[in-house]
Length: 132
Image (cartoon, rainbow, N blue to C red; front, top):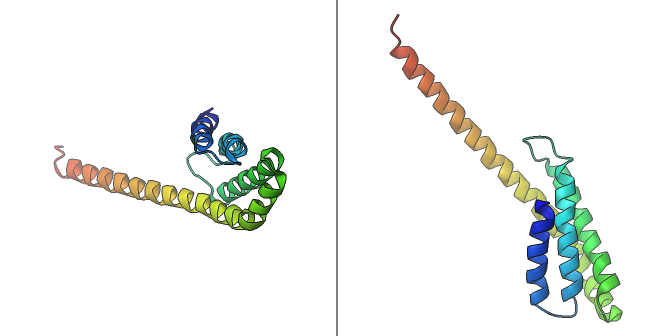
């Protein structure tokens, strides 16, 4: 539900930007949100898997290309656009998703280390002031 909601908001924004791919990009943005929501089910609880995130981004971007080619008019202009941007867009955005998830994982790990260290300090303080 979150993926669809985010995709719908982003898709509406994309549609308002205009251009001959406005509708196809709006539709594909909603689909990409749905893909993100579906792939969340394949990620281990509490840990976001970088490879799965890359695959989800790759599939979402390929679907975007397909939707643009199906929906955008004139087809010849859409085909020419995709010839120029499809491969870099698919690869860069897929790596971007994986990189973003890696950053989230690193921040989460750092916060867990800080919490563990603070718990250790609190236990040591309690141990020093314990009355027997």
